[in-house]
Image (cartoon, rainbow, N blue to C red; front, top):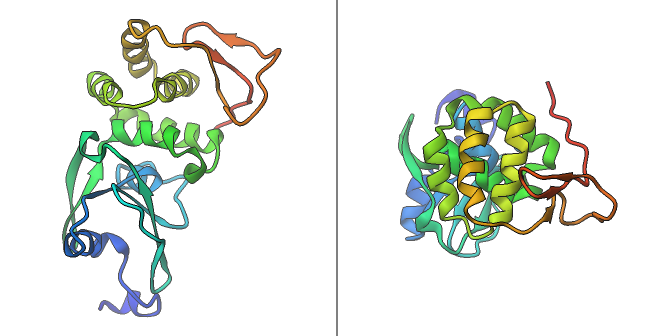
Length: 204
């Protein structure tokens, strides 16, 4: 083990997560804030290494590192790519899939302000058509609506426009930006059919 990791008790999870999941025969991908950081959006890095799989697994620790697992039923539908590491490679959600997952697993990302901050950094890596393709396999259309709303807020117009054009054909219902908060007497965003019941402030 390199000297710099001896005090931590283990190398970073990115060095061994692929072999670990292969050993247990579980499909996976590195996702959420961990994936965003690997794609260059590391302003809001999580205090844990976030992995998505199709089975329920308990949070694991390796030295000082904490590995948290999230469950997704249709894991194989999520666009991923292989990324090289110091010891091999690992599977990571694409920037587009990462953006959608940050909405789906909002609590893991902190809050909408955190997500907006990550999206502002991730925006330049988003490809509009690939974002639409990723949206097509999302179970909840409301996740797409909320993502589009946030992309507009952080100035990612090209990606937001592509999502809006596709979403118009889906005839989505009106949903609250924050489903865990009251939405009565709140302004409505007609483009995304969102009841804006939260104030979004991205960190600079």
